[in-house]
Image (cartoon, rainbow, N blue to C red; front, side, top):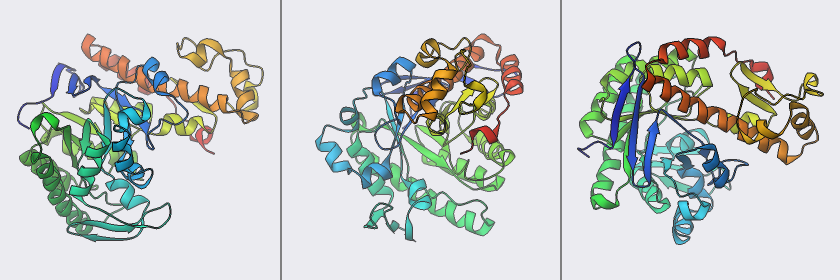
Length: 381
């Protein structure tokens, strides 16, 4: 993994923001990039054709969930995850580590991996570094995440240190598994920085991962309940130790202003379930913050969700109509808001990238983050 699949194209003088490109075996990904989450082999309520029309470049699959149901061997027999779900672009799969630790009950951590009962029917299950890589290989992933342990928040230093040492061993074994395969059949393999909220552990994690050598580096264990300043600090403590010629991926976040601020801290790749999750609650993203379309004030509002937005929902339907669909519990309502929210996230990263290339990122960052107000009461429920 000596030559880098990442090409740095531009940097922002006022911050650590970067624009680049990431070469995968199924095409080039232009960064910064938002990656829609397709946990169970589908981005909720949205078809692959619609994702293409929205300009999605790469989507996520979830190793744990697809392993539990329908099973990676079945997917492999169906021609792999791309063919199974009808998506021909790049797919990134997480390692299953986060789900093992957040969903599974009665787990037992050993040096080899984790024994647990899966969340569906309690069947005894084992996932370790090699098993995780095998599952992702069967799925046909283009960007593979190493197997790691995601410590909870808050986490005592002693526990965070123990967890990190185990994770580093698992990450080395994840890479070793792929080195038994010919280079032409390997996907990109990303290491994951852990270390909880401890700056020296984050630095140690990043430094040790660079010694192992990966195609890209993710920052994990963020957006797990910690305050936003700690989330930003986790990135700031890792970034200086990561090579400039590799892509950086902040896992599982965040809100629109958080993503712009993470770009300013040197992050290239993002994923988050928020666009489709809050859409199912009738809530839309706009440059001014979230909009709860269930609210009575939209009952006769003939404007689109977002003025000037070019997504299908905004080009064709009013807030009043979408509110009616949501109140009537019609599926089209949550589909239209999902399409809008995904468009908003994807377009935000395209716009951010263009500002970095144009040398105008500093003004854009200030105006966007300053103008965005997240109304958590509207997004709730």
